[in-house]
Image (cartoon, rainbow, N blue to C red; front, side, top):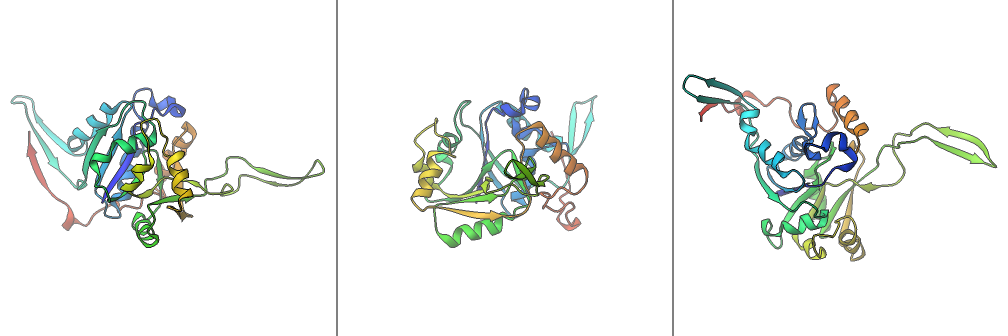
Length: 272
């Protein structure tokens, strides 16, 4: 099953990091957040990715073109120019990098991927800036059980501000930043049938507006309630929070194994 990841937006709210690179390439713990997202899916057995590119697409292309060398030891003989990459435990991912336009909206990017999807294909779909400790295998089973065209993962974001209870202009109680905000929001991590592309008219359509609204009105959108960890990376504050969690050694979204059994580790040397 394919996993579609949006990676083409301008990331203007994180301009401190995105002036020179697209937001999915902003690093957490020395790795692009895109790498973290792909590992969340790979942990549940999903290895084929279609990445919708736009702003600074070349940065993402260069990263994956050089992925093998960047993530392994290298021996270089300067006298002969011979380079050997010493293979380690590399992910068995298949990645399609697809340009979907510089100013295309989220729905338009998805629509442009129609040629990469069969007409009745079920696929995963998410944003290139959000992580969670989600079991996407369980998400898929939930989607298959209800039979609708679309499933969205609903999350409860952390509250950004404290709250006050007021009666007759008098503060009667104060709540300092509760663990969860009120209500459920779109957390990405969708499961979709390719028929949802018929709900998207063109490049200027935001997935979060007309398509989702019409799917909901048609009774074709279900919600998977995720009560665990979830965070987007819209601001420098959120980026720093994720960085601190990773550096603490207790990043909740790191659901993939830290060390594979030695029997599963491939060893080789590739000469270039």
